[in-house]
Image 1 (spheres, rainbow, N blue to C red):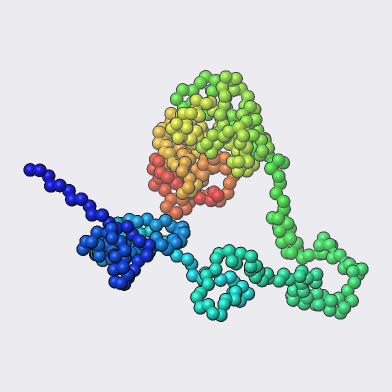
Image 2: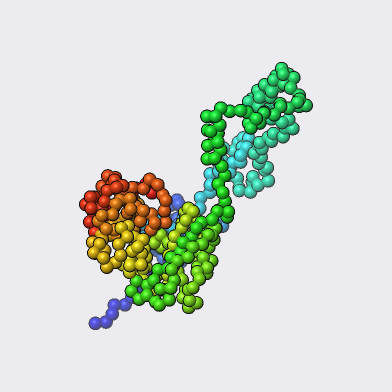
Length: 416
């Protein structure tokens, strides 16, 4: 089947610059142009609104616009739906609108108001450069206060004080060159009653300046302690030493004063259940007039520190010190030595290392106290007593009367 031939397009008449709206002008124009086809469609073509608008726009000079007009849609027919018109309006580019006139008014509108013509009722829009050369009114500056050279007034309380001093000076005629008051009579020239003199003497003695440590001395007793398990042959020769040294003398010098110690042995000093180093002094032990310390070899000191033992309570030292610790004077090997008991004496609840004393059951309390003071270096101290559960023991009572057994803990009161 052959394709249907395409119809030939109809020729369109050329557009004229002059458009006539009346039927009379159309008839005359049709009579003048014999070459135009006489068809029924010519009437619609001539009266097409789009064609007339195009002819009118070509005859009218177009103003220059900063925004280029873009034709998005080409429609030959004028029949468009409202929805298509709204969409075309939304898609068209937005043109910038000029700002209102009130935005260009300066700070002082009365000074820069321009006169307009009386016969013109249209508002006049001014450009942005119209107010460029108009000076604006400056802001008022705060007025600075001049600095005053007059000093501020004196405070009221100082004024009153000066007035009071002036009144007193005028009242008593006090001048700076007055004679000084005579010195008081010396206290030594005053004769006091015997009772007052005794009180004055006691007060002066109690408030006297203490003697400096450099001038005070202490009687130092150093006792050699052999090894409890493996004693050395040279330790049987060493006994004890007594020195009179100042309280600030270092223990390092006291250690070098020990005679008879072999050169290969480095003696170690101990006192009050701790090691005394070379930098310490007797004053650090709160010593009075007499101080007792122990000297031993380095291996012996390590033995006591590992077992947390006190050299004075070591089991091997009981045989050598038995004569001092046994108040009854019995010797080892006698029947009384087998009946001895060990008492633990402490000076208070905070004393974690009590002293041990071996005594016989028939020893008196006074003898036990004397042995304890001799062991701790407090010989001759008065007011010391033994207590059991807060009750004091009689000095002439025996250990057997107090029902004390081996290993009992006894409080020693009266020692600060």
